[in-house]
Length: 293
Image 1 (cartoon, rainbow, N blue to C red):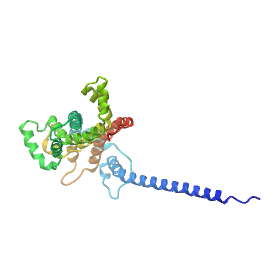
Image 2: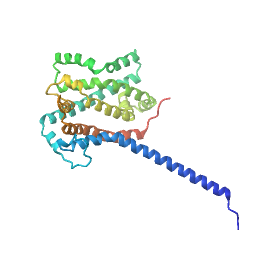
Image 3: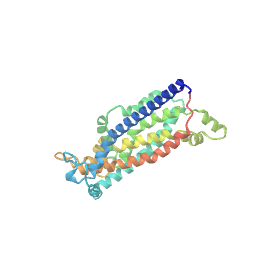
Image 4: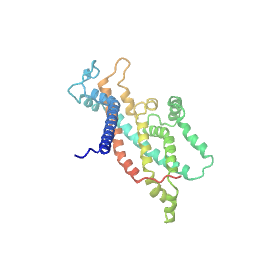
């Protein structure tokens, strides 16, 4: 009878050990990701569950983990005309501000990236300086300026306010993105007869699509969650939805169920916008860009 092949047995044992280690590492990694996902998503679950509980059950202690969901809070919310108006105000003002800030910031970033601007670094610092001070330090000057220009409590005024908040972010992020796109792509387009604007529109913008959608997402979120400027610069006509949600927090009590329902309704446009833009963002990233050395 032939003797067993010890080398083959040892090799098989090592392979099984390696495979076992890989499975163990994969299992630990998945467990950590699941635990972290639970920690991150639990506040969202808590918020949605509170919005689906009756008013007297929303803040009960200990909390009711098993309950019969109800849309009573959402029906009450939809029946409040002030909430519908504030929600529409935010959609219009934030949407318009994102479009306007992209129309201003993207070309400005392209010019700063491609042209030799005198004192370019100083210009960039000046643009960034609009975000250096905390909002509480600049809200009063804006209040007096808006009163003098008849922009107080107007949608146009709030759109301009949101643009001023996000413009520096768009310019700085997009300039860095344009710096990473090689100028040879534009030169090749101009050799084929394209003008400077045509090469920018047909070559640079498609390549910069991931950056454009990224700053659009961030600008939308920053404008959507803004509270202080809406509190000071509006009173009735242009009230944003964040200010209406804040109204459920009273000096003596908090309407937890309505607050949760309004907060959940506030999250939905952001989620929808993220899902819609993410498709185009992934498509833009799939094309890839050759980064300059």
